[in-house]
Image (cartoon, rainbow, N blue to C red; front, side):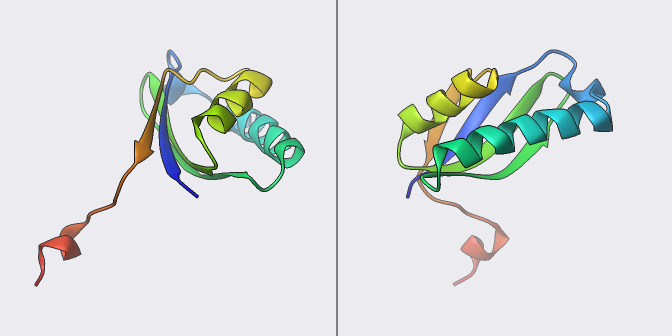
Length: 91
């Protein structure tokens, strides 16, 4: 299945409390359970005003459905084509 990077604009995301982050995570997991195994949350990165999420899903429509049902923004969705890291530089 394809992997996606979702950019979510959330003002003051970096100031969310651990309890707020837990509540958002619980809501996301609840929606994911209802959608079945065709969509999976891998991880998220919280910055000052955005949250970047990595998901595995059948298509972009599934990502949008999850965002809509969870009440989360999905301002930009990009399919990840490949991954590189420092070992990519090695022969």
